[in-house]
Amino acid sequence: MNAELATPDRAIVNAFQGGFPVVAGPFEPAAAALRERGIEIDADELLDRITAMDEAGTLSRFGPLVNADEIGGTATLVAIHAPEERYDEVVDAINDRPEVAHNYAREHPHLNVWFVVSVADADRVEAVLAEIEAETGQETYDLPKLQEFRVSAHFPIDGPLEGDGIDLTDVGAGADATTDASDDATADGLSTDELDLIAAVQDGLPLTRTPYADVAEELGQTPAWVRETLARFEAEGKIRRIGVVPNHYALGYSENGMTVWDVPSEDVAEVGETVAALPFVTHCYERPRHEGVWPYNLFAMTHGRSEAESEARIEEVRNTIEELTEVRQWDTLFSSEILKKTGINVAERAATAADEAGDGDFADADSADADSAAPDSTDADSADPDAPTDA
View 1 (cartoon, helix red, strand yellow):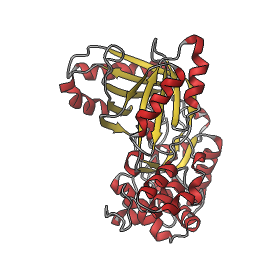
View 2 (cartoon, helix red, strand yellow; view 1 turned 90 degrees about the vertical axis):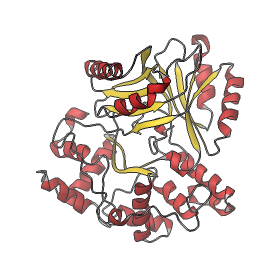
View 3 (cartoon, one colour; view 1 turned 90 degrees about the horizontal axis):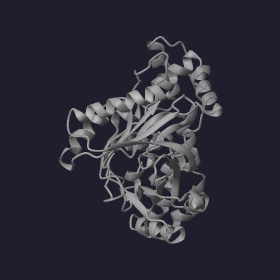
View 4 (cartoon, helix red, strand yellow; view 1 turned 135 degrees about the vertical axis):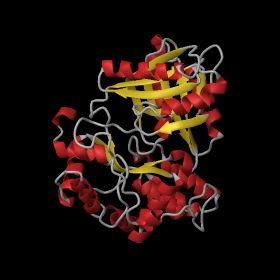
């Protein structure tokens, strides 16, 4: 599909994987910024092209990437062994769990199934894993983030503005964004109105000339409040960015390697920060080892458009680490099949947070159908390193 993209589409994908303006009519300044860089396009054509790419599957959606860790609840990456003779049984038992957001088959001789558990209450993780173990008869290996060095899934493509994103976050509401908490914030730091907003935009913004006003109308809020709140969320890190969210497979990034490294514990921070600075590394974390089963403590996700490109990037990661410390063991686990992929249930987390704060009405709000959350709508995918978006 990448080869079929027109030059203006390539420029849009390269320019706006973030940094989209939070103003009443955002497509006008975005189109003006493209024209300043030699891409002749007006606001209507920009909207039409983003809509067409969204409908064609080139984009996963258009809108914000929500930082799930900052809105309450938790997500964690888990590995398990599914024996060949019981493989489907084990996978089905995992996929049937509503707490499992993503599940991938990965190429590893023992830990061949990797999934993300997302829950509103962090204390639930242990219970969920115990229930999965009881049902499958297989031990689970919890691999939560210990340190986050990078979550920045940017996928450049050949064409104009490659490697030259446009940042318009300081236009409009973004210019005056503060990090002042709402007066009626819940225990997780968000008011019920703010939680409603997160639930409304996690699947994407409306593809209209006035997306923020349309969200405001849906919620019964003013357009100014929606813009100011989203801009503040970006400033606070509750939203990592707003823009086009590519389907990296559609852009030709078919080689998705989860590289794992056994790095001396005293060096992991320096190594993680250095590896995270490599432009093709989209996710980089420290995670715990499991003695006798899993010796690796540094994870770095790379994406390539060919096997050769992927191998070259993995080699660059290895060389980078070797310049800083000893590489004792390492491996690359490629995904071989998507077994399950749904969005993290932000509305469920929101309802739980509101209930804990004593606001029982929220659980019956329009966001009750949270199961419709779109894939990659939050970055719970940092729990899922194969996704372009966090655990």
